[in-house]
Image (cartoon, helix red, strand yellow):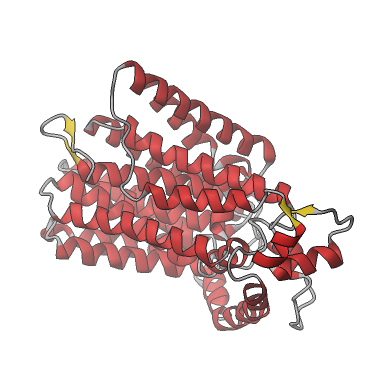
Amino acid sequence: MKALELFLIFLTILSPFFYGSVEKIPLFVIEVVALFIFLFLLFLTKKYNQKLIYPAKINLFIIFLSITFLQIIYFPVFFLKIISPNTYLLKQQYGGYFTNFSQLSFYSIVTLEELVKFVSFFLIFICVLNIFTTKKQFERMLLILIFIGLSLALYGVVKKYFVLQRQSSYSFSTFGNKNHFAAYMIMISNVSVAYALYCKNKYKKIIFSFIAAIICASVFLSLSRGGSISLIIALIMMSCLLAKEKVQTNQHWIIMGVIIFALVLVSISGFGPLSNRMSFVWNSLMDRWTIVADAFTIFKNFPIFGVGLGNFSDIFTLYQRSKFVAYYDYLHNDYLQFLFEAGLISAVLLLVFFFSLFKAILNETSNRHDPFVKNIVIGGFCGIAGTVIHSFIDFNFHIPAVTFLFWLLLGLIYKCAYTHFHSGNPADEK
């Protein structure tokens, strides 16, 4: 399992670079290595007669994948006309050469690419559940994430404010979009704070609190409005959950201290750019809602099976009625775009799947007394929640690095919640 952990560490380090792995080569590497790790894991579990660990509601995710696969299967035209008449009409008008067989997805090759991404990242999640069994492994991965976050934060600040000195630059650090950098760092910020809370040595506590403050400050300095607001919400949520679970009640000041020190760091460069960005929050939300309103027509016409994963950018041009003359690759709302592309059935399946995972994590954490488990799981959970909130107004989960970290961290906290380190054996899946 040591070798498999090293491969996961390699992907964790690789994924945020090259513009968040949006380029084809780094994404291909992630997908190939994820498949290799999973196949090797299957080989080892069979060789040593071990049980493969997976979440109880995995069948919901498998059904979702099956429905998505149906989007790229060729159906007789008469059958397509019955199950999705608007898809039939759309293809008849814009699909070019029309044969006796056709697919639910308007551009099936794009849907296949999205399906491969879903499978690859879910395999990462399954591998994490089976590879991480000891406290040392969890701490090692957490430290790697924290120092990756620190490196990205320092590089982004130096690049933007000291080298390029371009306050209005749309990119930040290694990401091509400051909002996606913020979405990635929100998850690491909360984990960093949680680790600082857990540290028993006061010097380590101070060091990791300082690191957490730098990481949080980088989110504000990226000038991502949604990211900054989501980070604050995530940290407040984390403080409330820790208080509810009565975890280190005399140290909750650290969270406030991290926020205050982060703001002090931001003040060095000045609050002007961030304040200016925040002043246009409402106008930006209204503009995005106008686009969403246009896009809802897609759902009305393709409610059950959608237009095909990844097809939004090509289909939306037919439905856009707003005054904004622009080409939209994404809707700036990951969940509604998924609903329009995958349809209602798939959306409900994934909603129930994730709800069951989050509920299981919180329920199991409430029954634990290990401060490491409580701090790390709550910190990771709130980091994920922050990025989930941010994705209501952005397309973060279309960035491979963000999606990779989401599934990796989700696997870590799910497994950590069920693992009893004092016995050395992972708890059985419930």
